Each structure stands twice: as C-alpha cells, then as structure tokens.
Amino acid sequence: MILNYNDMKKLIYVFTLCSFLVMSCSKDFLKVTPQSSVTSGDFYKTEDQFNQALIGSYAATRAVKWSVSAWVMGEMRSDNTHFEWGIQRGEEVDERENIDYFMDDQTSAWAAEKYNNCYIGIAFTNNILDNIDAADFSQASKDQIVGEAKFLRALFYFELVRFYGGVPLYTTAVKSTEEAFITRSSTDDTYAFILQDLTDAIAKLSVVSGFPQSGRATQGAARMMLADVYLTRKEWGLAEEQLKAIVQMSYSLLPDYASVYDLENKNSSESVFEIQYQQGDKGQQNSIVYDFLPVSGDVSLITGTVPSRTILTIAQMNMPTREMIGTYEDGDKRLEASIWIAEGSGPQGNMIIESVHSPIGYAWPADKRSYAYIKKFLHAHTLEKNLDDNFPVYRYSETLLALAEALNEQGKSGEALPFLNQVRVRAGLDPSTETDQAILRDIISHERRVELAFENKRWLDLVRTDKVIDVMVPNGAYLKTIFPIIPPAAYTGISHDRYIFPIPLREIVIGKLEQNPGY
Image 1 (cartoon, one colour):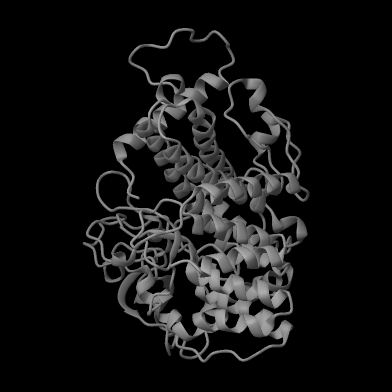
Image 2: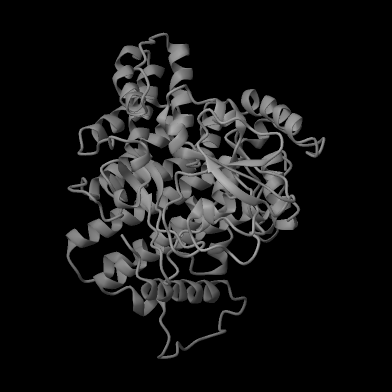
C-alpha cells in the first residue's frame, strides 16, 4: 500500500487539531468549529474517510518500527551492531551511544520518541474504532477496516509492552484531560488487550490471495504477530497453532536470500508484513540507512548516487561488528547479502572511500580505514537519502524459524527440523540433523540472528530468552578491547532491570506514572 501524501497531511492535521483540543487547559477555549476546519466530528463519516484514517495509522508504523529509536533500541543495543567513533559528536549522538552502553536514563530522547510514536499510532486507531459503528457503509468494508485497525493497535501496544513493560491502556479515544492521565496497567493486562485485538483482527481479516500484496495487514500478519506474542510469553503450543495455520497459506521463501530485499520483490510471497516506502518528492522515501554509512563527504561508491557536497554528520551508527561478521558459517550466502565493507583513507570524521569489498575472506588492513556497513536495505536510488526500500516486520522465514522453536521447546525436536532446514538450505548451508533439545535451541537462536540480522529482532530475542546478561556482558568487554575510548562505566549496568527501557521523564512528571526499576 503506497500512502497518498495529501491524504496523509490531512489526517495528521485532524489528529493534531483533535489532540490540541483535548489537552487544552481551558474547556471553553473553542466552542465553535470554523467551517473551514476538519474535526473528528465531521470527518469520520464515509468509507473513504476511514481508509484515509487507516493511511495515517500505517504511516505511524514507520516512526515505530524503522526509525532512529527503533534500531538504536532494537539492534544497536544488542551484540549485532555498534558504532564507530568519529569527530561528529553532540547530544543526539551521545544519547544513541548511551543506549548502546546501557548508560541511558529516563531523560533519553530516543526512549521518549518510541514511546510517544506508539501512542500517536494508538490515537489514530482508537479514533477509527470509536467512530466506525455509526458510519453508513457496508459491514464487509467495516470489518476489513476494523481488522486492520486492531492489528495496528496491537502492533503499537506490543512494541510498548516489550520495551517498557505495562503501560497506560487507552482502549478508546481520549476526549478530556481526565481521560488523558491514567495509571499504568500491568504487563499481563497489556498482553491480554493485545491478544484480544489480534483475535478480533484474525476473525475479520482475509487470507492473502496473491502477490505482490497491497501492503495492508492480512490474516497471516495478524496470526504471525499473535504467534510472536505467544513465543514471548513462552506459550509454545499456542504459538505452534498459529504458525501452522500460516504455513498452510500461500507464503513461500524466495529462492535466493539477497533477492528478498530487491525492489522488484517488495510485498512478495515471503513478505508477511512490511512497512511501505516510495522514493520521490512526496515525503514517503526511506533514508535511514544513510545513518549506517561511514562519515564521509562522498559515499557514492556505496550508494551509487551523485556525490554529496557535505559530510554526513550523523553516520557510522548501527554498524555490524567484526564479531557479527565472524558468526556466519562458512558458505552462508546471507553474509554477503547483508554486509559489505568500505575501505579508504583520510582523517577520522571524513573518510575518503576508495573501494568497497565483500566480507568473505576480507583481510582488515592495518594501513587503511575500513568499516562494515549494512547492505541488505541499500538499493539503487538517484537522490541521496531518498530510497524505495521497504522494511520487513515479519517475513515467512521468521514464521518457519518460530515454528521450529515452538516445536523444539515442546520436545518435538525431530518435527522442528524440516522448518529450520528450509531456511538453512536456502542460505546455502547443509540441513541440520541435531535433535538434542538444548543444542537445537542454540542452532535455532543462531539462525534467527543471521537470518533476521539488522531487522531489529536481536535485542528482543535476547530479552525473551533471558540471554541479555550472558551475551552482552562479554560483548561489552570485547568492544572495550577494540575501542579503548569507551567509558569505564559502559556495560557495567547490565541487569534484568535493563531488559526494558525507562518511561520518559515527561510522562512520569505530568502523568504521575511509576518509573521502571533501575531508572
């Protein structure tokens, strides 16, 4: 689904206006709506208007799932990526680094960004769901819209509960200041609400019927998120049920791993749900991968675009570590499809990129600057920071690996192997024959790491499998041997309290919310 920019602007205006009126301290600030204005009272009438509102809800996923806060908190916090030191520093960069270091606190701008963006998306979906019953169009169309809205609301709350724990549950649109300030719900209650939304969504959404898809949520996407919830909750049998239903649908792996991310394969048979982007001048382009490139005044050897005239001031972030490169098995096609290396010379903070290299067999030169960068989301584009690449939220390969995990955790290790091996064989690796549950658990975990690399999955996997301390303490020690400039306090604060992030300080102050332990 490609979002209409003019409709998007209209919906943002409606939401912003309504939010301002709700939060205004004066109840009679505005008693008469100007005839030229659009409000929620006269907007939610027609099927077209509700579909426009859905556009706003889908657009909110960009800020939640593929933004600075998404990859800083979901990938760079993990052992997959780090950042390279450069001279371009400031508060914005320091706060990213502090999350990586486990030195972040309740003033973190990025923790606040994700938190706030989730609630913006929730506000969009609540307005749809509150108003749709009174609208006059077909029940079939209403069911489709409700199904998509509940899927999206579940996505936003699933992000919140995994990153912050139990949060305030807004089940309807906020219409007064009294309704705006509510207490935190428990983690269990938050999950219960997510499960209900996904159950409702599955009942109303249709099964994908052809490829490429439209980009809108389907029953398969809702079942995949529900299975993800069950995996997080360690309800293996319930996860197996949902995942086996997806396997019976028409999804399939593409023959070649690298082609999954090609522009011509957007919304392909391997896509269960992905965030939509479109290059151009309508504000729908993807630009985030430029943050991951070396700091340089000319990145054209990497991007293929016309050289820039200014140095990338915010870059060298979320870069694959050498340990990450080394974790791929020999012959794994996913390494070269996911990571490449830029090599060059020049001063720190303005590298002159002289060549780019495959990581396979690469020898790190002592007399050159060389930086690994994420390749899988970087495809042909003509304008800098203006890419057409979508971002995957759920792929069918994750369905297969999740099913293998759910089966193995129930002692059905032999049944897990065919699903695991579909992913391994596609990557050019020999199928696994391991049926020892503990050993197979590690194999599946490793497959998830390399198959879903840089898709913001690794940190959440470490949390749900309780591997954060086991993995990140030695990872921090390893990084300190490479970067002596890392502060002594970095990685010393790793504990179970740091499995989740702080509630933003502003919400603590104005909403009188209880802060998470350790912050």
